[in-house]
Image (cartoon, rainbow, N blue to C red):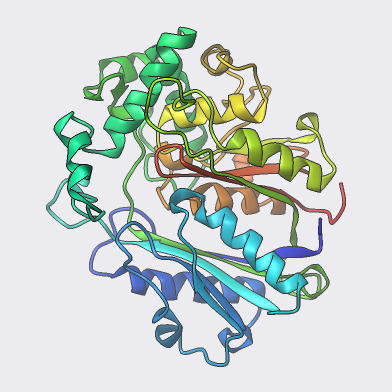
Length: 388
């Protein structure tokens, strides 16, 4: 399966504090931009995969909004932040099986409201499944930040990871964002001292440990490698993929906060691509929180278990470092489009379109997606050549 499909189009809308548009508006625009980027018309799409987001704001009616008919593949995909990588996997499988030829994968969201703080953007978006769901809330686990804080604290207690080491992840992301014209925080420098002085959101996570909130949409067009070579932009080949869903209970004795699905999905994707970790030139890691970057890098094997903090503090992730990571600024400093944030930057790097942030020798790029509270993980290996 390696290299048989490719990403042929990328569409990124305006991003950040963009008001007056719905998630559907952004999704339609993103798909149109991706098709234009590939040099095809919307009527040439015969597949559409949609990540509906946490609030289910876009779904199957997007087909009608796009004005496309005769689709042979239409579905929603919900793995939360792992969905973008999963959609590319499913599109590739469908194309290889002859179920479709040209598939758009899209995510869009518009949680920001003018005059309202970003911290309240997702309040009440997820429905409570049962009365028992109120128990974690009563214990203070009433937000994603609180739950990730619990995971981060466990890692700290087990391995000695520090807040300053988490801060190194945030500082590296901000350094990369300075080179990205789309980054929301491009013009705002961040030092480790700034990180340490920022307010605590959920102990031990501080303000700059937390991702941005953005309005916008991103789409990619997936097609066969053969067809992609005849289209407008250089193909970005899908070399490998994998998923991991550990199902850790938040209980004593589980691997929660210590091991993620990257430990399963990473080796699977590398094996499919016929590559090793030493072949990876760029890492685009899902970074809803600084801790997510750190623990994912450990589970992929770029450093030893429990060594992620020291690895980040060494400067390895930053511009000029040994392991360029989240080269557009990630979700911490660029824009927050769930798994489409790392995927879009992976495509940009594979095409050589990164400008001042372009990493030399980006022949194999690892893209990760994380969903839930370290519940779901998906990995892609992308590259500018069909074979390693």
